[in-house]
Length: 249
Image 1 (cartoon, helix red, strand yellow):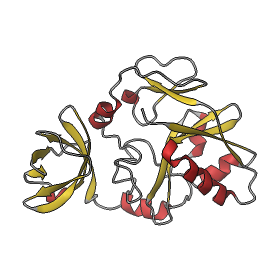
Image 2: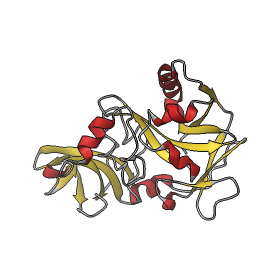
Image 3: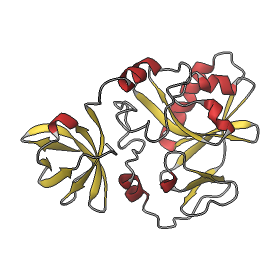
Image 4: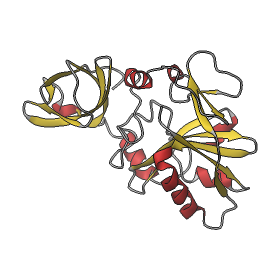
């Protein structure tokens, strides 16, 4: 399971501060946790995270590898706002089935189970989270999601990670323009592989670059595709790859 950093924001300006920065509507916290991202002014991905209202503050659940960077980024933006950012000694717990007390359903997709924060680390329960991610086309921090990513290409609208009715946030103009395009030319897709290929292997179609394959599980994988080039036979090295266009894409 990916290690997570749990940050807490407190102070009278915490709500409005986040509202002007992240891709989702902080007002939705009145109804439950949200999934969101922070972007560059050019609309590219910096970090994705879960936002949870708890005990009079706002928790941010982010990948440990991005924890220091996100803390620095938030501190840079807060200027004189009444916002205090601290790291909590909490651990993420995840599971499937009925959510225990204090847990919440994953806002990206209920099929991804529940999330909760505890004082002690969670023992591995054997759940194949990668297989679930592949089955439901959910990108992962540092694998499918990188500094070159645009969130709409990575499925954030489908994953409830962006709100087009809220006010401005950093990177909003680029994201809105992509939303109103006729269609995306590139993006995350689920493919079938006749074998295993290393994460990051280039996909080719008729000898031309057509994308990259990433997480794989149970004969399927997540790939970043150039849709116009992915119509014919695909290969990841010597491995045959099939992309079936469907509503998930």
